[in-house]
Amino acid sequence: MNKENKEKQKSEKMSKNDSQKIMVDPWGNSLIEDYSRLIREFGMQEFDLSIMPNPNAQMRRGVIFGGQDLKIIAEAIKTKKKFYCLTGIMPSAEKIHLGTESIIQQVKYYQDNGAETYVLIADVEAQATRGISLTEGKRRALNFYIPAYIALGLDPKKTKFYFQSENKKVSNLAAICSQKITENEFRAIYGSVHPSKVMSAFTQMGDILHPQLKNTMPGIIPIGIDQAPHIRMSRDIARRLKNEYGFFLPSASYNKYTSSLDGSFKMSKNEQTGKIEIPEKDRKELEKKLKKTLTGGRATMNEQKQKGGEVEKCVAYEYCKNHFIKEDKILKQMRDECVSGKNLCGECKQKYLIKHAFEFYDEFDKKFENAKKIVGKIKFEE
Ligand code: TRP
Image 1 (tube, rainbow, N blue to C red):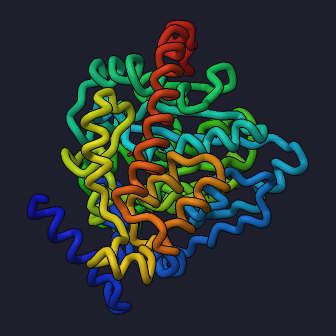
Image 2 (cartoon, helix red, strand yellow):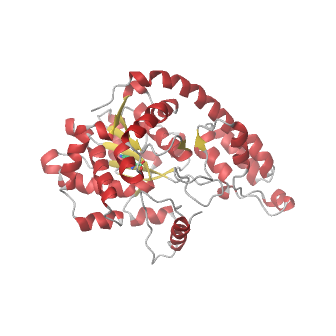
Image 3 (tube, rainbow, N blue to C red):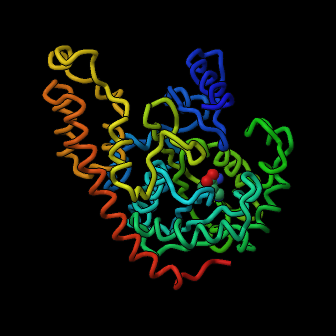
């Protein structure tokens, strides 16, 4: 853990104290401890499961904890009106981590429910904030990100993929958006006016709003809450451009962070340790990592047999709930056997975590190989 991370983690811990402000930094990596406070302070809405038609597993299981204007999206689904779903990712590594999988499941849900779907490669942002060249970003996207997204469930025929650097509508709209915010407003939202952040944030505004240039319509942006500042600014800007462009304010749904193996951090693309990635080619290594996950085990075997495990603290359970176990019935069984003291943590990991993780990765590997064959046929938006 480097010094900066330690500082950040400390400030998150302090955020329990109501006099401290919670920091949400799109380019940082601390865990959030109090989601309901976040909802209050950021003017978000709690995710209301009852309004969503056929909610997916992650919605039902509370991985999606909040949002913005989700009613209008639920209505569009129910009444079969036009709406769009858009998300993006920086090609900042050769792999993705589990947290990203949750976002793709959300996009898949909206796509299956009629959304015009956009997935962008944030190569301009990766260049500006991480120094990754556009050529390298493109290579990674074609070799890995795009086939991985297809393998995770997106329908390539129904998804409009594009690169930020190649989409003129996006960069032109970014320039228009940059006129609608003052320096002080930008600083209040992002905590900084660093030029590379300004560059990336306005490009992201172009991303989020550009599907409405052709047709104004509601849009849903599924993201990790670290991206909440972008939603805030895009809504302010959409409001200010309403007269000229008729934009709907973008809606959003927020995922909880995925914990690192030891439960202390948000899993992050930048951290070298403590993360489970996609893919995990070496199953032995994967098994070793999974065995290290923090559990809610008690101090002694006897205590655990008597009181049962503390399932809410268990990262192994979190991974199964959020990613690896699709069937509610099996997840419930895992939970019951934990809290009743039937299984000790080692047994439980073998029976549930490792077994279902292996199934997940076997399926991914197979679908990824197929998806790679069709990447060459994709026509990117320009
Ligand atoms: N900033 C996002 C990231 O860090 C990527 C991104 C760019 C994005 N444009 C977007 C996400 C629009 C959602 C919507 O990976």
